[in-house]
Amino acid sequence: MRIALIALLALGAVSAIDTTPAEARDYPFCIKGRDYDQPLGDCSFTTYAQCQASASGRFAYCDANPYYGYAAEPRQRRGHRNRGYHD
Image (cartoon, rainbow, N blue to C red; front, side, top):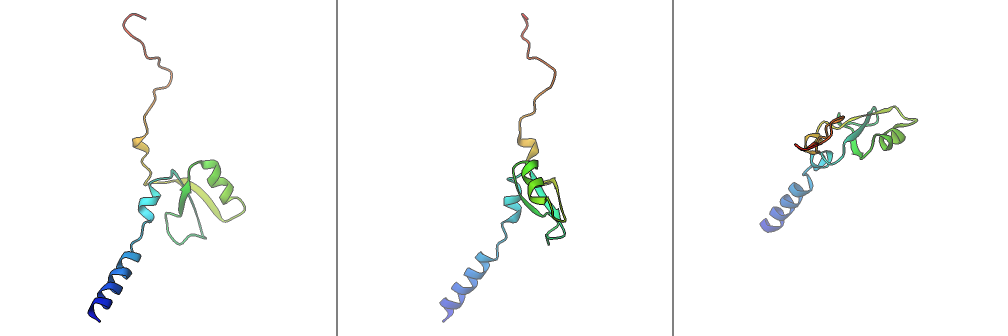
């Protein structure tokens, strides 16, 4: 009986783990509004256009995902050409 109770408690603990923050880091845009209980909203959009299409006709708006790893993307300098010493 103890083993069954411990197994049931372990199963309940594993199923109670919330994976939303880990998933939220994968997509740069979130849809927010009154239909979403969480302040972060639904962060499952790879483009702003996808998010806007889902928010269209609803009390919702799109915002940048605060947990997305923007710093991990390589930065490019605009207007500067990579020049060598002999150019």
